[in-house]
Length: 561
View 1 (cartoon, rainbow, N blue to C red):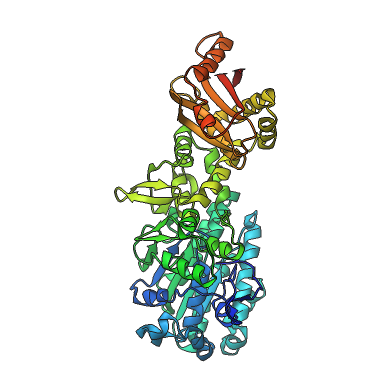
View 2: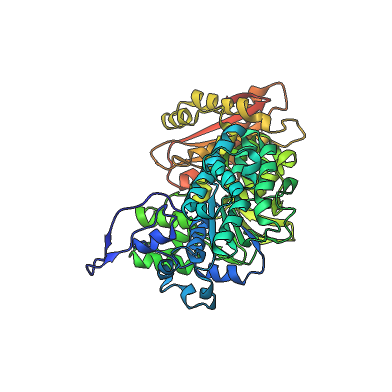
């Protein structure tokens, strides 16, 4: 779950007792316990896993929400190797006093992470998978080699030496369960972390069909009707339903953020956050921390982003810490193929509004992935959260917190306006009151990005939504108020400078209805004057106010100021 190690020893002010280190990017449960990192006890997850009747379980959560650490915890709990040493790791934790402690150290464990499978071609991917299998087989070479038959030895060596063909790769996990059962005379626990990482990468890079077919066999051979399997646990971000990767598994249960079960097993609940802030004597009020990092709804619980909390504790700064790179390319590509309805919903979200959308728990990729699937991707990736469930498939969604609001704006702007990379020049123009450059920058946005919208007269004014989305990129310099009540009406766009010494701006946008566009621009300017839209800026201490009437005729803009 966490990357990189902070090699700092914190000391309590009132004593010489060394405080626990902050586990930024430390994903190994044993390392956290043995090297005095702060650990939030999630070992009830083990008890729940064991009480769960499903033989194979898939947990879908956003990146950096504790999936890998939980899987590492399962490994050290179940692993028959070094069981006595590993047992000590759980001293003082919840599971120590559970009846399920009897299962500790009882099973051979296969722990495979597919993180980092990102090759650009199918050939590259096969090489990367061979490397993963090599590392896995290398862990067991010393104990397994002496018990192999001649035929088993040949297959084992080919897999170990990265000489296997695709057929042998597909059965690599199931073959290893057979060998481990043969050695230990005990069924095997199989843990697969980030199972969907290669699927998402394959979809983005154009070899989805090959990956789909491979993984259907790779997972199916080890998880379906495998007499040597004790339990299978998988983690990922999304559940992929297309082409039946898991359709043949009748022993399979999926747990997403929509399920009540395991709702507090990933991420942090408020009591855990309070305890951590208290331990490190952080003087921030909980409402501030809550505004930035809380707001996720997982099943029946409200959840904080654990990565962001850890980074906040380290830096003592309330800012955006979480960057979910997984799936971003997929989201951006889907945005580029989207329509005006999708973008209207995105604008509503940015403006702090809720949206009502259809959500399918299983995401169908391949040829069936449509622009509307973006809501599932964004929800399960951590950019959106559930405000209310209306039915089994209809949900009210919102942005979870202030951190995501800022990240979301950047993602939105990058997707739509990547070809009009003029944010810097626009900021300079606004600060220096270079009106002609301001108009040119806004016109460039329309020229490069208006194709995302239906500009026919049937669609009411896409320009406000388009420019409004773009102007959110100015957030560190200007507060963008869209359709804001001010004076005797609602101004289309008000730009309030964060530095009150800078000029503020009021934009009234119109679509051309006559051939006299210059006259229409003047009317738009006069509307600003007549309805006193400057009231809000004056009230907030802005003295220098620029008023601009802007009329669009297709992609052409005429301004009056």
